[in-house]
Length: 179
Image 1 (cartoon, rainbow, N blue to C red):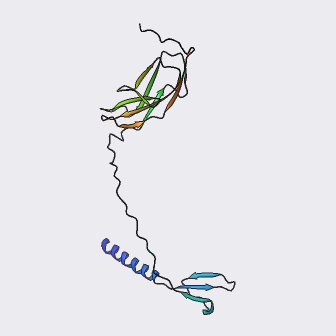
Image 2: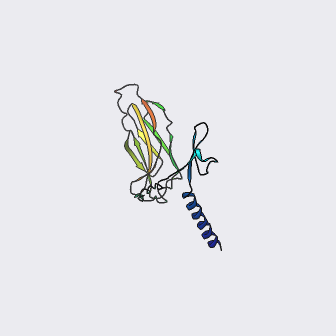
Image 3: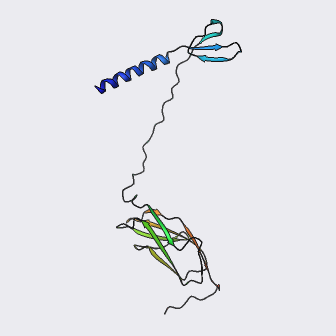
């Protein structure tokens, strides 16, 4: 029954569109010289003239090509966030022997995945634990960024970069000797 109703509705819609396309259009000029186009004849013929319309212009739709990117797998969309929890943004260290970097991912690291820590755009270290240590860093600024990699080494998510500063009291200070 609902199929019949749909068919009747579609048929009536097509008829209405056909009548609308074939409707007459008139150019009406009022007593002030204003021009109006309408589908109704004016009461006096002297200021109404039918308008000849040409064929309806149609433009073909552009061809849409399907995307060539592969849909992401469940594992690739698994992580909601990764952030550097320590050190703090713009933190300054005076003569540090080491700086600990701590990460937090939501959810925690999955099987086969690992963390990668980059410093100034270069890979510093990779590992399964969310802690890394920078031993006796030279003076200067460091931009730290963390990523989670899958088993093939593809980056799944990355943190916002964090900048820290290291100050040394002497430029030529010797590095401490190993004990």
